[in-house]
Length: 93
Image 1 (cartoon, helix red, strand yellow):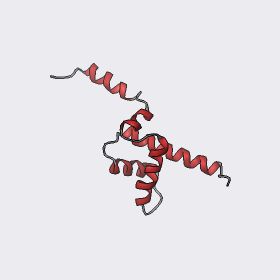
Image 2: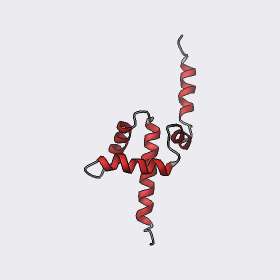
Image 3: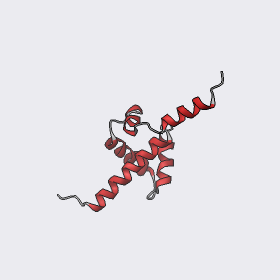
Image 4: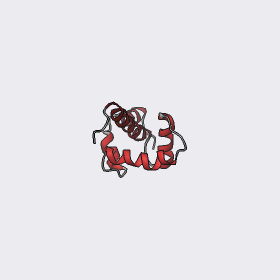
């Protein structure tokens, strides 16, 4: 049975509104913090140099092929946002 163009378009449009936090939970991460730790432990630790955004996304997808592209991008964006915040706000201690 063929799916109509309009049904495929509606289903595709609905994917863009998916809550990224819910997507993280669906693939096994408790929250953004856990996915950030995972990226540092698995992806960044295996790299022999600092990775750029696209390289990180590619590495995330290689390490977890079950992740959608949008979920991988969300994880990398969260890591980059945390890194930028840490640079701006040095930790006191």
